[in-house]
Each structure stands twice: as structure tokens, then as C-alpha cells.
Image 1 (cartoon, protein in one colour):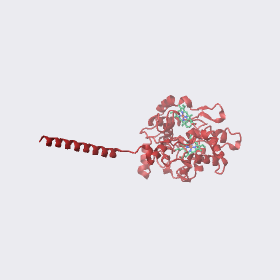
Image 2 (cartoon, protein in one colour; image 1 turned 180 degrees about the vertical axis):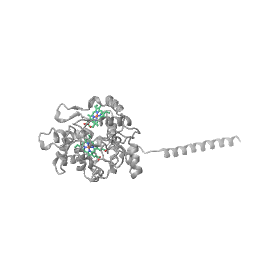
Image 3 (cartoon, helix red, strand yellow; image 1 turned 30 degrees about the vertical axis):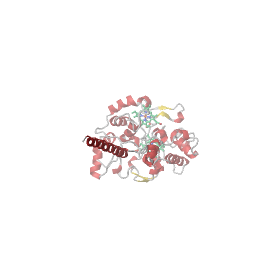
Image 4 (tube, helix red, strand yellow; image 1 turned 120 degrees about the vertical axis):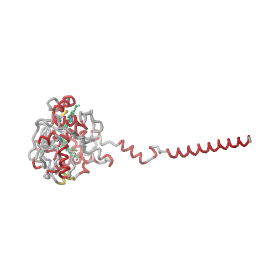
Length: 343
Ligand code: HEC
Ligand code: HEC
């Protein structure tokens, strides 16, 4: 009897041991995850994490000469194709800005309308002209409005160099990064109209230090190089036909990029409301006037709701198109025309 009990106990211990062993093996198999270095997929993820756009300044001496000329044109626009050019035939831009004052880090900064990947997006349909436009047409859009200047001929050395520079920037962008490097990050459009008083408070606290209380910025010591802190209004700024003159567009840029050095698209400083109010504030001052804007958007229904100049395909006031509230206008286009608008 005693032996029998001993046998049962031994068998029990044996079964228990086997059970524990089997469970351990199965659990191990079940929870096993390959380590990053052994999986091809996760190796690609690591490389993607580490991918960076070109470091333009460090490649300045090794890039092709045409690409380098393109870089100089967009980084020191006033000197190479603007008011500070020694040859009067070379004065195409009309204000003191450089392209790179808005397209930050020489067009490589995500969230600031970067040019990394941009040449792959053209030709492209544009509502402003109601036709398929080339990259040259798009560049000239900024030449005539953001830069308050005139068109560069498509065949000019300058236009070719700028396009070559953008193509060079775009060469090795991974498919997964295309979206991140495109356009601005949208804001949630506030219900209310812009509050200029609140915008002024934000401006004084967050912007005036660099751009000046009077919005006129600070020139480089070497004045022909343009501005260290660019002007935000007045005669040396973008004109009233520019994208930055639309409150929603300006708010997106500001939220994702300003105050400079403190905010980025994925780590903003201002709230949506603050960016929106200060965007309205800087756009409430005088600036150069763009002629013939009544011909923009031949199909008026495609005009962004915050385009501050008429005509429009609706009866909202000019004031409301400039300062909002924009949600009722957006709702109108949805109901009336089935068009979804976000700016
Ligand atoms: C620390 C200095 C600094 C502060 C503070 C700052 N900016 Fe800027 N801002 C810059 C610089 C520098 C540029 C141009 C960037 C470049 O060329 O790389 C710029 C560019 C801009 C531009 C586009 C170029 C233009 O002239 O239209 C806008 C718009 C702008 N800033 C708005 C603002 C607003 C609004 C604020 C406050 C919320 C602000 N900035 C705060 C330094 C600053
Ligand atoms: C005052 C600011 C400002 C300046 C200066 C400026 N741009 Fe722009 N640019 C914009 C805005 C705003 C957009 C539209 C961004 C958006 O809606 O996503 C834009 C868009 C573009 C695009 C299309 C980008 C895309 O992804 O489709 C190109 C190309 C471009 N600009 C080139 C230039 C060039 C070249 C210059 C100088 C000759 C220049 N820009 C100067 C504000 C500016």
C-alpha cells in the first residue's frame, strides 16, 4: 500500500514536470519575436526612421553647378534675381524675401511646403488657373505673388536651375516619406472669426522679438543677402494675391514653423486658435497689391474659402472671406455644390 502511494506520488511529479516543460516550450514559441537585426522588414523600418533629406549646405561644393545656382537663387533671391541684382535685366522678384524664407531649410523642412518630392507631383491640376500646370507654372505662381515679382521664362537658365535644384532634392525620397514632406499640416479651423486683439497679444509675445513690433523684420548685415528676419507686412512683403495672405494657409504655416527654432510641424508651440488669430493679425496690414486677381479661379467654386479677394460663387461678405468664420462657408459649398473644402 505504502509502495503504491509512493508510485502515485512519483507519477504525479513526473506528469507535472512534463506539463510544465511542454507549457514553457509552447509559451516560448508563442511569444517569440524575431530581433530587429534578423528581420528584413524591421531593418527597412530602421532605415526609414534614419532617412533624412539632403544636407544642402554640406553638399554645396559637390553638387552639380546648375543645382548650386538653383540653390543660390532660392536662398539669396534678392541678390541673384531680385531688387539687389546688379544687372537690372535680372530683377524678377519684387520684394526683399527669399524663397527659403517660407520654404525653410532651403526647401527641405517638412511642414513648410518642402520641395523634397515636389517635382514628382507635377504636372498637376490647379484651380487658380483651372488647368493642368507645370512645375514652372507653380514656381511662377510664387514669383508673382509671394515674391511680388514677375514670371521667370520657362527656358531661362534661372528657371532651369531652380527646377534642377528641386529635382536634386527629390531624388531619393522613400515613398513612405512623401506625405510628411508635402504641404502644411492642417489646423482645426476654429468656429469663431479671427480675433485681431487676441492676434496682437500673440504677436507681441511670440513674434515681435524677431519680426519687429512694426512687422518690418531685420535685414542681414550684408544687406544684399536679404533678411535675417523677414518682414510680415508692408512693401517688402508678399502681396495680397499670395497664399500666405489667406488666413487658414498662414495659420497652418505659422503653427508648424513659428516661433522659428521653437516650433516644428510635429512639435508646435501655438494652439490652433493662437496661430489663426495671429495669422489674421499679420494679414490685417497694408501690403503690395496684385493686379488682375479677378481672373483667378475661372471656376469660382474652386476658390479656397479664405481667399480674401472676390469674386466668389457665394454671397458671404469680403470681411467673412478674409477673417471668417469659415465653417459656414465650408458648409455652404458642401451643401450647394457637394465640394469639400479645407482652406
Ligand atoms: C526667433 C526669431 C523668430 C520668431 C520669434 C518668429 N519668427 Fe517668423 N521667421 C523667422 C525667420 C528666421 C524666418 C525665415 C526663415 C528662413 O529664412 O529660414 C521667419 C519666417 C516667417 C514667415 C514667412 C516669411 C515671411 O516673411 O512672410 C512668417 C509668415 C512668419 N515668420 C511669421 C511669424 C509669426 C506669426 C511669429 C510669431 C508666432 C513668428 N514668425 C515668430 C524668425 C522668427
Ligand atoms: C511668403 C511665403 C512664400 C515665399 C516667399 C515663396 N513661397 Fe512657394 N509657396 C508658398 C505657399 C503658401 C505655398 C502653398 C503651400 C500649401 O498650400 O501647401 C507655396 C507652394 C510652392 C510650391 C508648390 C509646393 C507643392 O508641394 O506643391 C512651389 C514649387 C513653390 N512654392 C516654389 C517657390 C519658389 C521657387 C519661391 C521663390 C521664387 C517661393 N515658392 C517663394 C509660400 C511662399
